[in-house]
Length: 159
Image 1: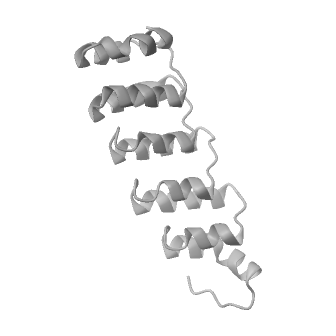
Image 2: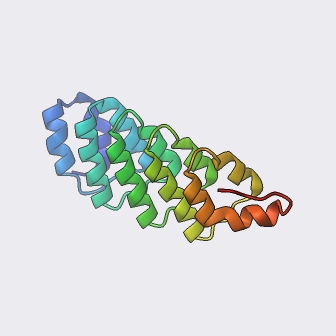
Image 3: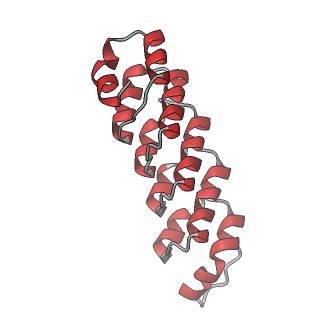
């Protein structure tokens, strides 16, 4: 089944028909369209099936769109989407990490900052201050303490 047909007709189908149609998808839409359908379905298990199918078809999930799935899928599915996005070249910003606070667990927040540091994405002083208390001190220390010291040489950082 093609995504355009699925997207237009999904609201008229039962959950069992939706499940069958998800399995038969051959193309997929944009992340915001997938989110629209997830809001319509309102079933975390069925939405997880849709997300997994979308990922298998190569959908792109920018981080700003992943946040919109909060409450529509489990935290585990959101973490899988984050991992998928990172492994498919999506870049994350400090604001996007902050957007995941309260949605995902501490390990995932820490992994996102670690990913930024590993990809050599610039963090300015405001970014570091915003992330303080959101990500673990050990992650801030391992990836960012030199940066803190470079910006604020007069302060001793105990991270």
